[in-house]
Length: 537
Length: 51
Image (cartoon, rainbow over the protein chains, first blue to last red):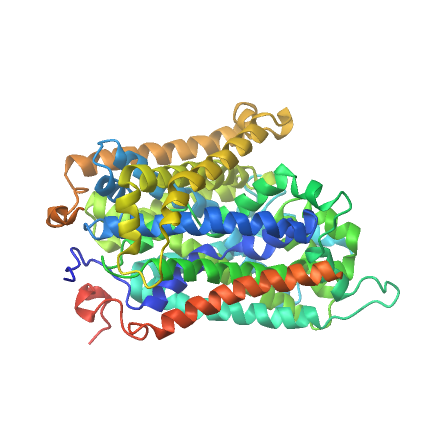
């Protein structure tokens, strides 16, 4: 017999809306900038083997686990990370671990909305012709440095930074308005327009790139097919098996899948908690993964690198893939668009699609924070959004002020957007496989499922995925701990004042969350609904 | 672009596109496809469209 939804503070209105919202949360800049860079860097097509292994062994199983954990907590009336963890694990420390579900999206949002503003700003400047800076790469670097405030701390708050601050203000306000409007009338409503618009923009840009031919007859080798080959050819100069034995490639492929599917971001677990206990999560989870992969492989893999290759050639593109994705997107591609016929408008569409990809992710990062403020602190929605706005804006202002060298942004990205995500994803994998248990976990996953979930998936989630995840995490830690002192992010905390302050900011956020969880526990706001205890297997 | 490149590109794009089409078809075939996940009564008052 179908059960009643215990607490109906908010709910999704349509199934397609949920899937689009989760897909929107997952599709981000990495799909269009990081993935193609990795595919081109690692022996072309050889990269796709570890990539798909990671998708089927790590990505989809862990995404399913997160959907199941979220719906499990939601069916017991809890929508916040601490509450969901409490519902699954009766241990008193569980809600404190669950605070990671709030910590991760809050800390990532603090810098992500800044990057989102870059995308919107570049779309605007591209459309207005301000990025028509000729064939001088230095001019584009200077534009970027001025736009993001890289010239010095506080430079964004001088006259030359007003434009950037305007875009940041618009993006932050848009996110808050959407999350205030609620799950169905805000996030879901927006994603129903934004996701098709994103795909449409990408298709238009893709058609332009694929019809570039050989734009400069002086360089006949710089044509679109060679550009595609640069991304997709399995270049086996060292031998196929030897290329495949590159451990770094396997780690980067796993990392790409992991971040792309948005495991451990706190998004899926929160969104799934608003489903009914008998709603399908198996097919919905698979669809959102497939939608994300379509955007990444079929769209992202076909646009960025071929376009850059056609105008800049192999060596320049290869060099740009060795550095940050931001370098490729914001320093190299604007020059490519200026050289391209209709490039001004294609570039505008490209940065617009990046903006749409970013805002559907950033709005998803706010929901876990608002859910906790409502549930744990007992606030009404307006107050919960206001509190979230205050905390995240404080962090955003910090990132905006310490803009020289992107030190604050990089530090928050390292600790909040990478380290904490690995920790949260590992905790969630253990929670599903070992605390909830294989039998209950599979039962939860199969409840209302519209596709068959083989029992082997349970084995995969319990043993293989966590081992894979922990292995990648350990390798990542080892690499960073043993890096040269000037590139070692752990030593940077001791050496660089701005990095230390950024870590202090995250420490403050952690302390705030610990106190909030303690208060919520004290007031018994995170207790699961007793009505569902009898349904335990 | 080499033959291997074509195989990898078409195989990769075919795999993700095929997976997406499979999922979308399954969802559209589902009897709940066009229905609301939650009846209007499930939504909190401020989420309902204004009368």
